[in-house]
Length: 577
Image 1: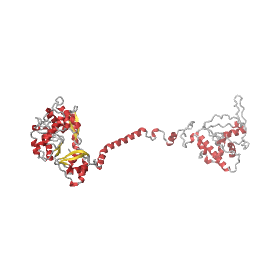
Image 2 (image 1 turned 120 degrees about the horizontal axis):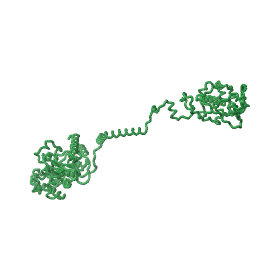
Image 3 (image 1 turned 30 degrees about the horizontal axis):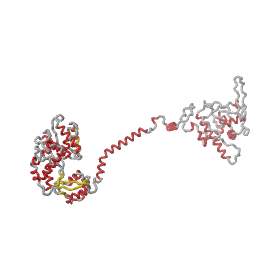
Image 4 (image 1 turned 120 degrees about the vertical axis):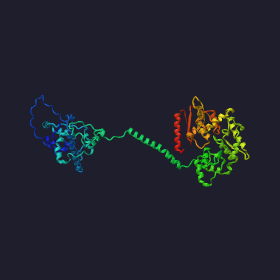
């Protein structure tokens, strides 16, 4: 229920000096209040209905409990608080003005003596007739003890006087000094969100988030800006990581190629260790010699040797023959050794694994100076040289090794030496004389088809599986190397449809089942051992998919083999094959 304004309550107006005396705690004897108007005699009340006498408060009497607070609106409470602040400002101004001449015993405003209550207490003003019956001194003491209560009758009586002295500070004055530390809950925000709710008596303190939401107009969580939680940060990190990984894989090859382009080629240092007999054949150019040096472990890379040759210009000339070199030589040291006549071995040559007989005899001719025709005539009678009866030539029995002959060696001596070295290898491998022919034929196929020592034993198993009618009914080996040998072309690794369909070629294993008529090269120790001890496996197909590394894919089904062939064709397209 609302109360009447102060000016309409019928309370007598007090002067500022009287109000100051009341608030400062001085008695009524010092400042006598004006006599109230004589009240009308009260009507007689029956004894049964008479109210109990109002207890008085003396200086030493215990304070009686205040009557129940009368409900007031927050707006009225705010106005009362503002008026109280204005009076407090007046009191401070008066103290500041009279400070030099104030008496020692003059009391000051006891701010800390009476803290503001956490919950305002409002008392209803007593009727005038009842107030007149209370003694003067206790009433003054009662008003002084409640001088901070905005609902005190004395405070209400002085509102008119305060408004006359400070009319502009009635609503604009804000609490100062200690007042700011004891603001009431509805004073902490200038915007009153409960202005339309005049009957709300709840004074609970709002949280900081609630006050900020009301101040900025956030009434719905959906309207508030959302902050990214840990899941959002995790998703962002995963996206960044995925982009980084993708960029790494896409840019790895170009960046690696760019780095390799500006990095120097791999190279050893020094003159190397050990001994290597290196062969330069008739017609070998600088690139071929560089590749052979790298393959035999003389230099670290063919690029380093080529760069060394290029740096010397046209002064470099290579001569066919055998040279005494070492392992792991620098490109500069290897080139100097090849150009030094003292390192050239007279009547020394090397036969590589898998080399055809015609090429082996040509290398012997270059080293010894014996014409190729003389060497071919010495090899015309295989049985005279001790070869099996099935042999029609020395193919397969010119063992790969390094040979050195005296200057007066003959063609017959050269050929016989090569054949004897092959028989020695077969005997050391444990091949009986009656199995020499078949062992050499299979070993020659392995030597031409296998790209590595590990693959040699797998190729041997493929040959065995294909020759087994229970596993491969046709019995066709289908080796390109046999077709190449039959047509005499060793410059390519592919065969055409016409070449594979040519039945006139006795070495065409696409048409003729079983082993070819004879060896297709000269096998070394590893190929001979693989022919005797094939690896275990179900493979029926294989194809070399990388000519640079010799990588070979072995398959047990035709579908797997066709996929590997497609991989090999892709390699040829990328490398201009």
